[in-house]
Image (cartoon, rainbow, N blue to C red; front, side):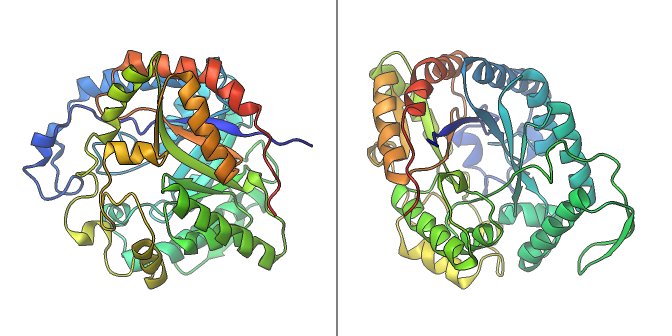
Length: 389
């Protein structure tokens, strides 16, 4: 059976009114950047524009829409990914809804199981449930010890699956979570449960964990050569634990904007660099507190080329990122050519298009979605993916 790529739309839903001048006054773009810069009336307009983009992506042929969650982040106005997924379920009809994802290490796992099941029922079984550890800031924001993050994540993951697959009521006593009675009334449409995805940016341990659980791994925007290395780790681990992986186990996210001409797309695409050097700026303990990452993860990130906008590596400029296909901008023909290069190199089952940033004009984004859906995605669907060797 021939296998073809699925293309997802993704937006961080940024609060695009923040400027470099605003950020320059503070040591960090997250925990130190005050929320007095937030205007709810401006956010009201932005949220509804982002929801219009979701609706159009569904209408013009995207296979799915991916959404996420961050806290204390001006560049991501989504402190609750499940609320956004609920909106997506009502403004779309066909697209899969990839929640990538719930920060289960800092949330109540039983409530997460209930909310995701509720979303699966509302959407008619369109939910893909991504679980994430969250950034270091999420752990600090949630008031948990960063050294406990991965253990808490793993326990929450197992408990959520048990909620979906084990009839209640049952008692649960774990290391971090304790419930006298677990009996979620709402259960997901999909059986035994929605697909579970696990994302990462560079840690090989995350890839190993995903492969051991047979969960598809989604790389979120690392350079292609780094992503190739991580894909190799996934394939090797999968074979060690006894299953044969394929494109359906691997996805990749990158920044893409399509316009009527290359010149217009290149100019609009510069907005992808909005706040690039501020997003992770700040005290190291905000981005990489002791114990949050393992020594092996740090070793890999420091030994291989990365985008390097934060703790590791050397920051790359707009033209450099375009040259290595980390940012792809152009007219439909150009975008098809460059995305085809990426797909043929990585052979991913899923491609996530990070489609807008900062103060990018809403109408320009809507035009990009239209061109991607009507001209680019049909061409990408023609590419036949190859089995993994």
